[in-house]
Length: 260
Image (cartoon, rainbow, N blue to C red):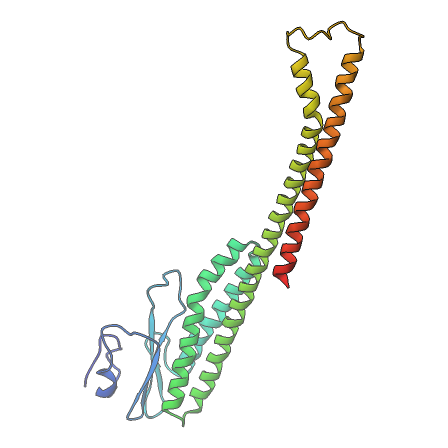
């Protein structure tokens, strides 16, 4: 009787199946020969995403099921599927607990290999159904595997949408903060432009140079300097405000043209 180090030593499988097994279990799949059906399935992926732990299920021609570590009977395959259902509930709780884009990313990172494994699980049971169309237990297991795959697919999609929404909200918050900072800087520039001429004239005439206005018609020269500075500041303020409106109009038209 041919044997494989991957299988329990008391399993009596035909040589055609045993010879197809290598040193590692490989992908999830089904093998059928002489009424014997062998299922090679993967356990729910954990943190070690690169290494898959396999589990074997054998159905003899008499319809008796055995498993490598879950006991006898078709209930062993049911237990295997229930592990995926339990994992789905765990990831669903993790998704609901996540509130940031980074949190959703970590959930997606752990959920992706489980989703792939559930898809391959369904494909393996569908392959078993195609190889043996007389066993109704396989039909039931195949349908349950489809439900598991669909549940993980919906959960992954929902988590992905939640992540995209969190990123969009964060981007909108940053855009609002940037707009508020830009408006504050604009008001500061207007104030600086308004007082710049006064400060400049005060600096020039506040030096120790003799310009002849020190004692002439006091305080007329001082008041004239202040008035001239204020008028110049108002002119600069109007010019800067006009430039800002013009720039905003160009940006708005450009955005509208790209949108339509």
